[in-house]
Length: 345
Image (cartoon, rainbow, N blue to C red; front, top):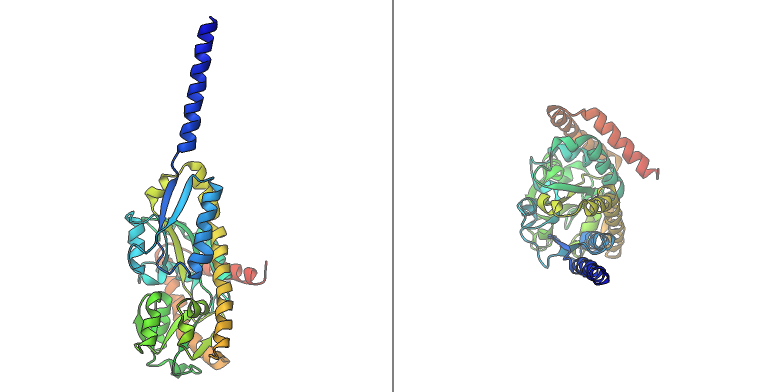
């Protein structure tokens, strides 16, 4: 009897050891993140790389985000790359997909948010509350939204002080609402991804760019531009979506899915917005140090731009109505969120 008990005890100990060993040697779920800006860019350095580290820490190493040494495709191709599983995670600029994310323009109409953080958090809240059912991101899992700060116009030869100064300027534009603004202001738009901006400006292919302040420093354009015209609330803005391959998400345990989602959503929107906002401040100081002439749009210019761009809101309302969404309610709520956030509430 004693021998039998000893045998059972040994068996249990061996089984327990095997279980412990299996746990100790379990391989983490590795997620490939493809970023299409340099690792030194604020989006990677200050936002996504720390976010990846937080995911690994809070899942106790069960999930690891691997940042690929180079992008798997060009900036525009990243939506399909994640949908098709070429990469597991990325961020995409919604402005790079004309006609694909028109419903998302609620968050980037001219003269909307006064900071990247307010735009980011308010946009996520409104999407989460009203627009999930519209399936704007069908085929991928949207983890978060964030936006950059107020967009302005930055030029190399000609200062923009009045509405007529926009006409015939060759301006690099990413697409989306910036392209709409460029068209109605009668600029000659050159639609190219942000990383190509330095070459376009330095070779004289374009006279200027539509960008948030941050991008002037991130893409070294502060070495080239001579004039900046900024607008309260921005001439335009852009939203980025943080997306994940559906099958990659399904590989995670329910516990780790919950951790990932907790670190995403509004948490990531706030983190990204704050990071991009801090970069705006840094870039503004850099422009001042290089004696770039910074002009705040005067009342006449603001009034003229608002008059020309007023139709964008009506266009968006028509898009929302066609999709069964109460557009006036969405915009009212969005603006209320912005006002509260910008008031520190």
